[in-house]
Length: 398
Image (cartoon, rainbow, N blue to C red; front, top):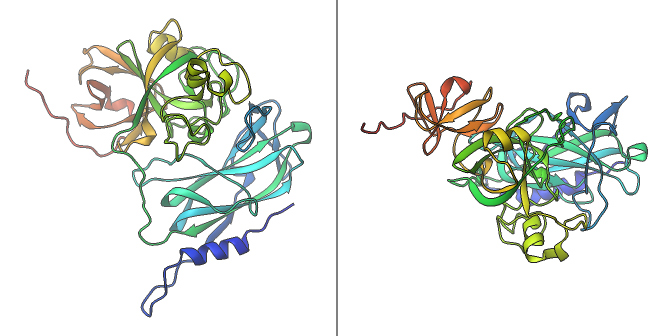
C-alpha cells in the first residue's frame, strides 16, 4: 500500500510561501527523492530482493514510537540512509513508505537535520502520509538524513519496497540553529550494561571492556561506529567521553534531557529527571516503566563495561554527572583511537579521564600539540584527526 503526499505538500508549501510582490523571487520548489535501500546501513534490517524486512538475528527489542504505555516490545530494525544535500534549506520533510505493513506492525521514518556548526539535530519521528503532516525539523538546513524503522513480528512483519522523501523549502528568516551555548548536563544514576557478545540498537557487537553508553531514547542514537551523539560522564573525580550506541535503560522513549515541550513522553516530569528515577523514587506511573515492569533502580544511563570499570573506576552502580554534548554549541571533533585525558597539556600531567575511540569531544582551544576539551581536561591533538579551527589556549603563569 502507498500513501500519497502531493496534496498535503502543495498545501504546506503554499502556507509557507511569502506573499508575492512584483520583485519577489519565486519560491524554490519542493525537492523529492527516493532512498536507495541497498545503500543504507542496516541494524536489524535485511534486504530480501528489493524489500527491506526485519532481521530476527540482529533486531533489537523496543516498543514503537506511538504505542501506549505498557505495550509489548517488538523486534525493531533500523536502516540508515546516506545524508542528502538539498538545493535549498528545508524545515519540513514528508515521507512516503511503499510496501506491506500488516496490522500490529509499523514502518516509519526518522529524520534529522545538519546544524550550522556541523553537528546533527536529534532524530524526529515522521509518520508516513497521510497519517500525519510533513515533520517539522528543529532547524532549517540544506542537509538532512533519514532512517527507516521497522517493528513487528519478523515472520509476518513489514516489507518495504520504497521510501520517498520530500523536503519543503524553509521560509526566509527561519532559525538555522537551536544550539545552546553550553550543553545540557544532569546528575543521573548509572548502571553497567554488560551483555558482552550481544548487539546494541545500532548494530554494534558488544566487546569485552567496551566503551559506549545507552540512553533511553533512540532520538539520540548514533549510527554504528559514529559519534554524532556523545556524552561526557563524570564520577569520582574522573570524566569519560563516549558515543551513544544503545537504547536504554528501562525505557526507549524517554529523552529526559529535553524540555517538556520537546520531550517525547512523560512530559509532566521535570527536565533532566528520567522516568525510571521518578518511578523508583516517587512511585511515578505506579513505580513502573513503559513496559509496565516494576522499576528496580533509578537508572538514566547505561555504561559499557570498559567505561564503567576502567575509565571511571566504578565498582557498583552510582550517581554520575552526564553532559549531553550534542545539545551545546561547542565545536565537537571525533577521537580516532581511545586516549587518556590529562589535567594539563603535558604527557606527564595527571590522567583525569578517558576518551573512547570514535567518541566526540568538545574542542575549546589548542596549545603545544594539545586540545582542551574541558576545564583542566586535555587530549593530545594527534588523537583527533580532524580538529576544528579554534584559538590558542591562554598560558597561565608558572
